Amino acid sequence: MKAGGHQFMSNVYYIPSMKSNILSLGQLLEKNYEVHMKNRTLILQDDKKNVIAKTCNKTEYRHSSSSSSYYYYYCYCGMERYRELKTEVSSPRSPEAEIGHRVEDLWEVLEPQLTPTEKLNSCFQDLPVSSFPPSPPSQVIEILSNSSLAETVEILSKHKILSAPVRDVDAPDDASWIDRYIGIVEFAGVSMWLLHQLEISANGKPQSPLGRMDSFTFRRNSGGFSETDISPLNSENDDNNSVHGSFFETLTSSEFYKNTKVKDISGSFRWAPFLALQNTDSFLTMLLLLSKYRMKSLPVVDFGEGKLVNVVTQSAVVHMLAECVGYEWFEDWGDKKLGELGLPNTRPESLMKVKEDEPVLKAFQLMREKGIGGLPVVDESGHKAVGNISIRDVQYLLTAPEIYKDYRTITAKDFLTAVRNHLTKQNNDSPLLHEVITCKRDDSMKEVILKLDSKRIHRIYVLDQNDNLEGVITLRDIISKLVHEPSNYFGDFFDGVVPLPQDSRV
Image 1 (cartoon, rainbow, N blue to C red):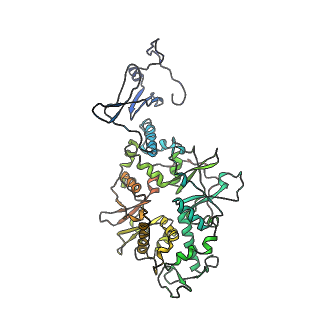
Image 2 (image 1 turned 180 degrees about the vertical axis):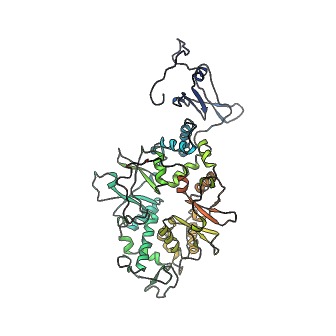
Image 3 (image 1 turned 60 degrees about the vertical axis):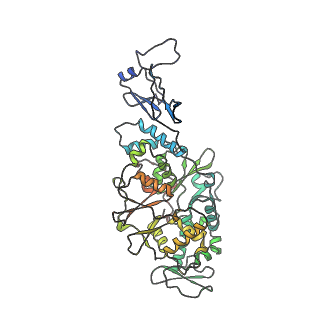
């Protein structure tokens, strides 16, 4: 048996000269055994659905009149040979598709009375995190806690990643994994923390380190948004609810930016706890953390070797799903319409958005206040999407501040135009260069996954029959519809990790 036990059958064929046992399919069926043959695999189960044997034997045969490869299956049960004719099967096209194949094998042997969701939960519970495709080595990095904000931004930008674990340089050599790292810093988190300092400084709060920075002073205007006077570079008062375009260029050259350490912003907006997975943890644990528990990325550690071996992100999981198109388990789930799955889960009136002539800082301020990762830029009517600003796009305020210096103020439209021009010059095929990606409520989950994966975006906007904005679907929304959390599943998993720091907004 698969579990290691034994079962015995009486009155079977016995041929003294043969060195191998023979089982007759007829005898198996008479004794209430079940034989399943599909997708290169034969599975034998007893009357209690226990897996007795599973074979994946195959030989390759090339048809004389075609270059196609067909796989013939030889299942040696008694004197019978079975083959699956004219079924062209190729090896999984990618490591992600290999995961899909493994899920397919597990899916086929589960009890038929289970619901599709229960079957998916069971399949992902049986897959270890170690089988998830590794990230490129250049993207599995850590940042030292005494790195400056400027150094942190440079490291993340150089490695083309959005976040990284922060290792505590003061931790002893024998510290546990929880004590060795103080959290995960995001590119967007650094940028948003700086903007928050600008805001509280504009409110006149003395504790802000930005009370006066180099040639900048700050005040609050009647509209409620922060505003700057630039002295001595520009003595004109700006009545717009925004900062002057040259502000970020001055900010990134300031001593404040260069001297503030990444550990100084721990627990701030989008600062995540260091919640590491082991290679032996299950896919189900990984998927739940990336969806229900709102983790953007998960480091994977090898406790034996004492090192970080992988980082799993929401986008990597959605890419895996895109590579699983064609497998029965995926099609069963992926063919469902968005409306059937309860998506989008936001109402049109509650959808956060910004008009194209409003300050881009308002967009980032809304993201921070509402804890969201992006919002649409809309036309004057407020119903038609003309662009998208993601919280990860705030990085361009720090990595390319010079592109705004000719703007008196930076509106959402100005921001998108400046960044697109910059990316075009850099030959950077960024999602920002594409039109707004949309879908309809009657589109299938599969269609949405393929759009998100091909465009490398983190959200897609849902339009109604009049092409007005109706909602938004994020990577987290998609993963959350794939699995559900069993009762008391995590137990003491979060001990030592949560609750988060008091001022954390993750």
